[in-house]
Length: 335
Image 1 (cartoon, rainbow, N blue to C red):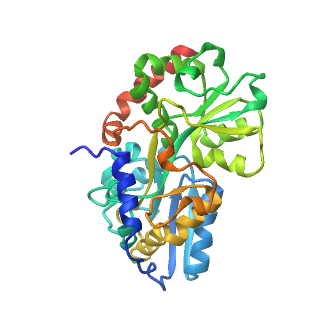
Image 2: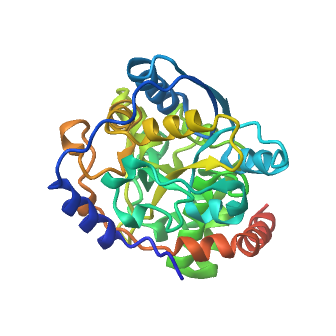
């Protein structure tokens, strides 16, 4: 069965659950150490570790960071003797290729999360929801207005002026480029490829635009907004008017996790209301939970004010290798 992430289903679920009674706090008293493989930035990781320190003092979370694709391949290589307990995070379009590595787990915290943001077999659950944006440094546009559409980014005038991460290693980049092809077709993706510079690391995209090395970077809203919140007035976020792409960011329990029950306690903590508020306020991640009012914590546009072009995450996962080969041919031809 196709698990299409339907924006209306997500919004309806969030609205319906908002009126539900308050849920009990996550389990207290967990003790021990768990190993978390994470592709998230320092602000996001620190936000979760801060909640763990305050709410679960005896629970220690040790982190190993890297690109989502790199970490998933590491988990695959370690499958006979798992070294990590949890992985956080990636999109379903990437996780789908690694299902045998994950342990089903229905966290009690998931009751506050719409069904559309939970994998049907409980292999992964959304910790937050991302929107794709163009991060723009207006000081590097030569006095020209910021582009407002995907089609504008295909203009040869932007050749070499747009940076994105490598979709083979970054689920962020994979989501963006898959969405572009679905919205504009293969010719549109090929035209965009001709204008892009591809970085091996997603963090380089942000730094390059923030420091003025590139005028435009394609990334997730939460990553780019950190520069706006940090006071860089030359940075703005563009939500392309034809529709941008929305994707949940998921966490998983690794099959055979050595931490056992302690790993599940850490999983619960990461989905808790406390953790998601900390992520929103410190790392600007839109919560997956229904019981958090984003407007009370950060100045991001309301979800229903942004036009979203729906993408089928299951199709993106099933056709990942095929798409990456096609993308590589477009990217190589553009050099």
